[in-house]
Length: 474
Image (cartoon, rainbow, N blue to C red; front, side, top):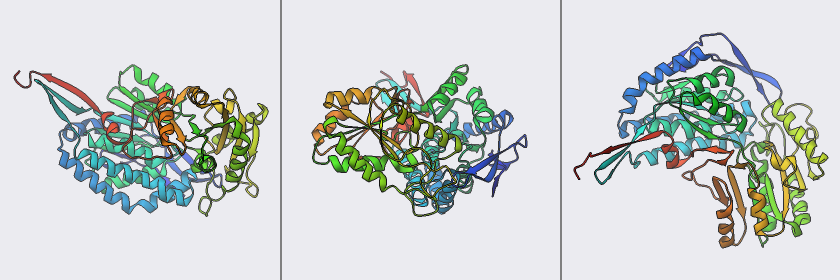
């Protein structure tokens, strides 16, 4: 049992104002694995005061001072990589290989990227007689989700610190262990008091007080579109900046060419990764209508290869994160059947041999129409929908016919054609043949949010631009 009952505020581990706790459930066993303190507005206020006090010296720190801190964090992060991986497996059910691999690896990847960018980031630029200065926005409230804990903490905390901001982090109460260990890493690295603060707790008790607090200059939130809308409303009265990375229903256009079979199979595997709990997951696969039956056959075979089981064992995917998530996914799977989609693989209920835990069968639907619920709503589970298109124009029309616009995917052997298709998809990032880049900006169009994270673009989220006309004689 883990007991994380203290918060990290002003460089110290402190007791919360109120002695309220939340249980954390292991999704593989459905049993309580530990407790965290559930913070309050009083805790938020205490952390904001610490961050506000620390902002004055930290905002005036040199590039070299910030680089040294990030480098010390990198050293401490590597020391705790195993602890982080174990925590992620326990709190949200990521298989050990994924937790110790990409889950933890994304965090260090973003940290190394932040170090590289900070070395050359232009905080000042002379344009004629005007000096343009990029200054830190101030105290930042960072609210992160449970599905990729280290990724989302890293893309917020490191750019904020690198640009001279101070932060208050609220990890998801569903996956809080890794956030607590992250705070221990920050302390061990010698982060100046008040520059980084951590409060555990849920949205109503911690997230809302952060959103409305007049001395928080910015809220950066990753999570559902519903919650993002509420945060924006709560933040409006104080006119703080709100950066949001929200939901997605990303299209994956598979081109009609020699790589078709491999790209359909790859699309299934990509969708099932992390139990489908990825906001940018390629959940709508688009294939030529003439090859729908072929795609169904390939997808059925690929889904059969996705093993499900104890995340501490050697399985491709573990459970989904919670009972609520499990029940939502089951409801949408049943909805797909009711609306007439072809059930290709999986279906309702747990996989055979698993009577306990929030395990979901790797599920594929074929002959899906874009007006069906399973093609419109974000399922956030290992459920793939396959839709047919007449031609490329039809594929792009279907791809863009969604209220979301976080990501898109184009897979095909003809690079010129793939590039042309990618240009026409309305999304913040369009991945061609599974391209990946730590410096590529990540964020959404439409109801998928605003702002951009990752790389240099993530730095710009945390700065204000000051113009000083007349700084240099004309």
